[in-house]
Length: 139
Length: 139
Image (tube, rainbow over all chains, first blue to last red; front, side):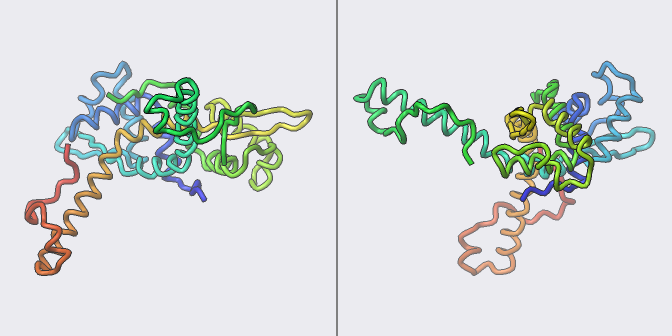
C-alpha cells in the first residue's frame, strides 16, 4: 500500500512545483554553499521574492540556511527528495512495462520481416502479433 | 543541466502535493477504471471536493475520464510521473553516496573490532577511520 498521508511529502512536492524553486535547487546542486545574494543574482525577480521561495524550500527541509556575520548562505539538503522518489517508484512499473512491450513488439516485427537473420533467430518472438485492439495497461 | 522550466513538471508536482489526490491515484492504481462515485465513497469529503481534486489530476495528465451514459469513470495515466521521477533521479547520488559511506564505515568498524574474522579479512577497509569532523557531502 502506498503511504500517501505524509505532511513531509506534501511540502516536498509543493516546493518542487515551482520552476524558480527547482532552479534554486539546481544552483545549490552545483556549489557546496551559496549566499542568498549570489543565489538571487541570475533570477529576473526581486530579492524578497527569492527569499519567499527560499522560505518554502527551507520549510520543506530541502535547504539549510547558515548565518555568518551579516551574510546568509544556503546549502542543499536533498533528503526529503528520497521519500518523494520512493513514492513515485511505486508507479515505475507502468513505464518500464510499456518499454518491455515496445521491445517485444519490435523484436516480433523484426522476426516476421526477416526470420532467417541470426539476431531474429536468437530472439524468438514471445507471442504472435495480436489482431485485437491494443491494451494500454496490464495489471 | 537539470531541466527545470517545464509547466508539465509544475502541474505534476502540484497535483502530487495533496494527500487526497495521492490517495485517489493509489485507488486508481488498484483498479483499471473506477466511477467517480465509487472513487469518492471512502473519503470523508464532499463529492464536489473530490471533483475538484480530479480536475487537478486531469489537468496534470495523471488521470483520464471517460463518460458512459450518465456515469463517468476514471483511469490512471501515470506517464507524467516518469518525468517527475527523472527530475528527482538527478539528486539520487546524494542518498546513495550517503549509504555507501555508511556501509564503508560499518565495514571498517567491523574490521577494527575483529580483524581475524573471515568476513573482515575478505572485506578490506578502503580507508582508515578519519579523526576529522565528518563531511556531509562530497561533490
